[in-house]
Amino acid sequence: MICSHLVNLSLLLGAVLSWGLMWPLIGGLKGEWFRSTLSESSMKSLNGYKVFISIALILGDGLYNFLKILYFTARSMHARAKVNKLKTGESYPGLKTEMIPEAEQKLTNSKQVSRIQDSKQRCNRQI
Image (cartoon, rainbow, N blue to C red; front, top):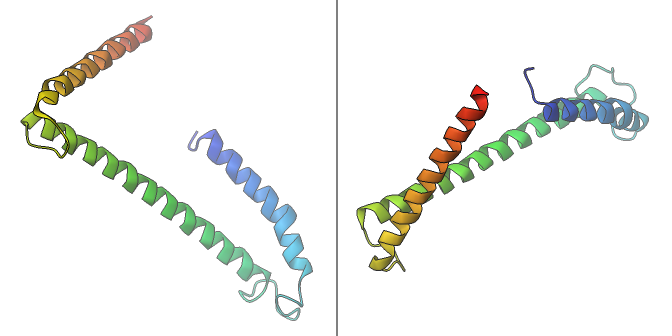
């Protein structure tokens, strides 16, 4: 499967809503929203609404995903910088020097936990 089930269901729902609900409603407003003498393939008639709504959805989705990736990347980079400062012993605002060994211990414990989880997953795959 190329796309996840969520994407497929979203596309199906969008197709049903647009072709079954939106376009008949907008088509009923022929003469009010756009001239009734225009051909169906004209970008100034119903086809124009279809194209520009589709472009707006694509651009909105792309912008949302770009900002989401940017946020998670910035958050990850900030967390790594924070850990690196703890490891090197550089001063960090509000950090007491006696907290550094405790933070290193937590980091070591989290690495050990992830190693244990990885080995459990490998064992489950082999079974």
